[in-house]
Structures are given as C-alpha cells and as structure tokens.
Length: 408
Image (cartoon, rainbow, N blue to C red; front, side, top):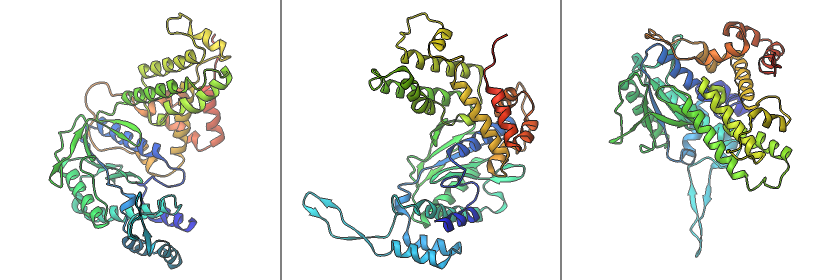
C-alpha cells in the first residue's frame, strides 16, 4: 500500500484531492470558491461542469486497470499481486429459489479493500491525462492563475470542469466523456450539471443528444456552490441541517444532565453546522445568524421556551460560559486552515495567492476571503503569511485573536 501511495504522489496531479494525505473535501471546496471569487473580481467569464459518473467504482475494467498500472511503471511485483487479486473472480446472486449460476466478474474495484482508492485514483488520472493531451492551442480556454492553467478539480469521482468559454467547456466535456467511455466509465447526463457565473452567458451543452441542465447552485462535496459566489446560502443550509440534527437528538437527551448535553452539542451538532467553514467569507448578517443558532441550541438544552424573554448573557452564565463559542470555533478553524495553506506549495496556495487576468469592474468590490484573516489577526495577509511559517508563533497569534477579552 505504501508503494502505491508513493506512486500516487508521483503520478497523480494536484487537481485530485481524494485519498491523499493532508488533503480533503474542504480543499477542493476552497479551490473552487477562490477561483469563482477571483474570476468575479477580474470580470472573467467562468463556466463550470459538474460531472456525475454512473457507478464509477463498479465500472472499472480489470484489464484496463492492469494496463494503467503498467503505463505508470508500477513495480512488476505489485502488478502481479493485484492481478492475482482480481483475476478469475466469480460471483453468484442468492435468491429465494437458491443461488444463480456463477458469473465472471471483470469490472469494479473491491469494496472495502484498502487498495481500491489508490487503484481508482491512478485509473481516473489516466483519463484526465488523455483529456489534457487533446488540449492543443488552448481549446479548453482554461482558467489561468498566475499563468497556470486549471481545467478540473477532482475528489475521487466527483469532478468539476472549468473554462472561460462555453465552447471550451463543451470541448472539455466531450473529451472527458470520450476518454471515460474508453475506460468503461459512463457519464450520467441526467445528473451532470452546468453552471455559469452570474457575469457569463448561459452554456448549452449536449451529452448523448441530451441537454445538460443549467443550474445557479450546486451541492459540490456537501457544500452549496452558488453561481454568483455568495456564501450565505451555504451557511443557511448548514445551520438548517444542524437544527434538524438538534431536533432529532431531543428525545435522546431529555433525561440527560446539562454537561452531557453540552458535550453532545459540541461533538455532534456544531461539526455539522461548521462543515466547510474554512472556505466561508463571513458578512455581518452571517455572523448574526450563526450567533442566533448557537443561542437557540443553548435554549433547547436548558428547556427555555422561545417566548421567555431571557437575555442571552444570563443563559451563558447559567451554562458557566463567558462568551459564545461557535463563531470562535469557526474563526480558529479558518485561521488554522490559512496557516496550513500558506505553508505548503500546492494547488490551494496557488488558488489563494494566484491572480486571474482581467480588469476589475466599477463599484465597491465584494468582501474577500482573506479580509476575514486580516480583520481577525489585526495585521495584513502578507504579514500573516510570513508569521504562519513559524507554527508556534502563528498558533499564539490565532489564540490571541480568538481568546475572550474582558469588557472595559
């Protein structure tokens, strides 16, 4: 497994964040949101295609998977081990009338096998390399950050395609479809969506003579991505899901003590509300909604009806707290993520610091992701980037920025 992981780090591009050390869904959500933010600032068109495969993991051809391993010069012992694992597989279906005849299994990676994610990553990487090889004379009209072209963001089989033109996105989409079919992976036209930024003309793309639906928002890796780049709808969605989770817990903790309820709240409810918060750009109204949600949770724990006119401070005092915790947690998570990004030379850092060519429009610019960082720390983003190289120093700065301060 370690040898395969090493091969993945060598061969698989930065655009694939799935099944890799120190990377996760938040990274691709962050990358996509930063690209949308920068394209909007520079008045650059952005067209997105969200690919959905039909049972991707179950359609991997065993023969083509072995060929892919050979293509990437994997050690012959590893190839032989995997070949022995997958060759001559048979399966039968158990029915009410007994088992069916034994059938040969020639497709699909093994469910639950620790090798499967690595094999799938290499398999899909070969598809995207074939797609990139077709990009002559910038046919895909790639989004460029500091001159570096970006045409796709992947997490396992969840793929987002990016282009500056509808023609480029169409060319990219058709080639992904073609080379995926060559590897036995089929696009699901009904679930594959197209999104255009609010400053771009609408795209019209056909897959298998079926027009892809054009949407203004899309649930990408659990986060609500808006065509206009706004974060508020995603925050509202996370708080709504967390509220639903809170209601489902009410029957469980009716007879529990308040300290235990608080532990459940912090371990089961708050993480649902803060999923992807590292990628948020907070407005004043967003902060108010987050604070209101937190106080609603505390009132539920103490069984205080919404009609009771009790000030928030008295509720916090009853719980032995000096201040609200949820916004503080969000600030800490976002600041720590900023430090993580600037310390590594990867795609996330490029999306954070890179620039998209274009001209800024008139009027007041929308709040940037980095403005939260400078506002909370009390100094510039450039100074924060330098300080982040010193982990202990940056950790102290984060603690100082988010710690409780007694009112004057």
